Image (cartoon, rainbow, N blue to C red; front, side):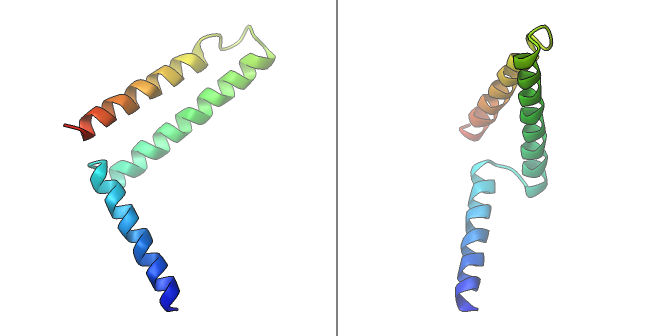
Length: 81
């Protein structure tokens, strides 16, 4: 019991540190992470379809990946302000 309590406290501390470091609330972090995760899946699907059928989604996968990279860079710059 005591060991599991220490594990939970450690997880809560890591959770809180991560949110503070990223200057986000839990809700903001949730929306950011889920939204970007879904877009990564979408880009992956586009790239897989394009791999099989090169005439489809010729630019969509790379566009999404570039947009995601830009948004993560902007977020990183916001954190370092």
